[in-house]
Image (tube, rainbow, N blue to C red; front, side):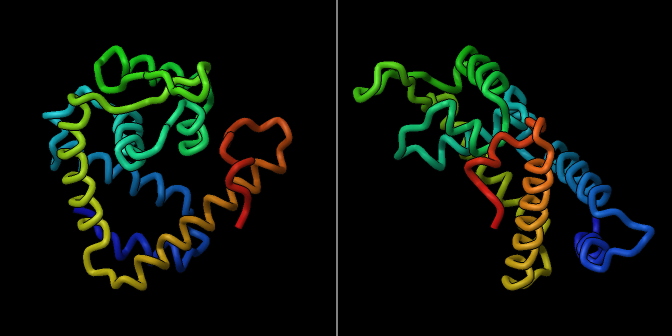
Length: 178
């Protein structure tokens, strides 16, 4: 098991021998390995990481009409990527496309019963991961971590705006810098 406190000390008290980007990449890899070994992953192995995030997003927004454009903006991914992922998820029986009364061009995305059953497992796994990552942190420290991460994301969004041809973060136009 990794030592998250040490990781955050490195991030916060950065010196010339450490790079935040490398530490974030390392933490992401460790978190993925933890989830692979300590979750219901084997029960929901037909769900890839991106599919899981999309299912969670649809679950969180089940009282709203969600369209492919919403996924593009929320996850910062291109239209073609969203289209491919959604098509595969429809084929696997996780998502349904349905017409909406107010615009014949739009297809609302919603979860199937098969997907709803998996959501319960996903909630449990994410709660467990959150508890492991933030063990020993006060509520104030957790808020501070989110603040740092949000600032880093905004720094990346701002840097990509400086590069006129960059399509790295399509979400920039909606999010803006804070």
